[in-house]
Image (cartoon, rainbow, N blue to C red; front, side):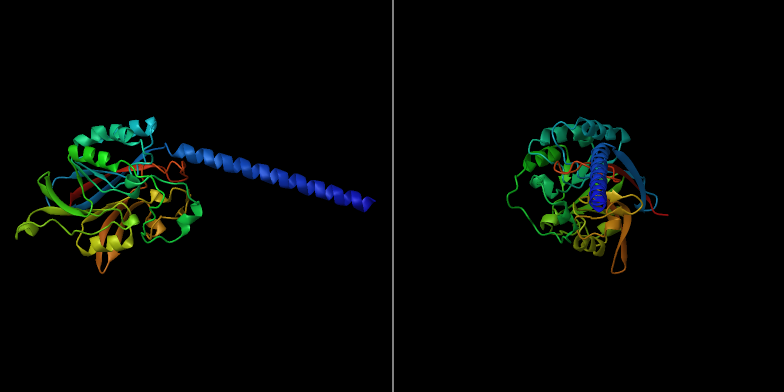
Length: 317
């Protein structure tokens, strides 16, 4: 009889411990989710300096925006993006994934309006063309080489967005090359449509005169998703700097370790920040933005706050 009571008591104690553990795990999970939602609005500005301009050239300040993933009603994000115009950049580069909702274009254009008075260039991401969808987060751990998965996805009104960008003077760099002059320096730009959905087709650099290579210039490459094949193409072609987004910096990171995934074949330690891409003896600065937003189906960030980047291109020593 005593043994039965002891056994029952032990069962009761085990059940109580299990309940406490389950309650604790639920509380921790709820707190983590709450913090993750809070962090989506902790916008920050990262500043970088790159010595890539010809000797004696004046600085060019480039504002790099990516992965805004705009949804109607995001007033905090809208106000923060509008205030970026106070930085007085010389050029704006937008590396795609601007939308996360079919009705997000008016809110996006409202946020970007002060910046659209500044010269700029852009490339689209898949979430410019197609709306996001809910997915198993474990899929992000599968190595992705940029294969399109477009079935059952809602088309977004990207044409309206792109027309507005073009009317403001921003140049669509989807599989194109383009030259402009800024601060006395020729900017040679090249860009690709989104590699994540296999739309990339490298166009090379703008064709100039026979003496154009000797004129002061800088070569800037743009892509939404930084797949290695695209980075290799840009590097082999002589890019001076590469701008990309897509990774969200990992979105959910481990403090002191960093990103667990990059959502492409880019090594996770390169998922956010300025690193140097190497291929066949060539080295190019690669700036990957952690982005300003997230899919509306994954409204959280952990140890990876949203960012814009002000990159100052300055003269070589």
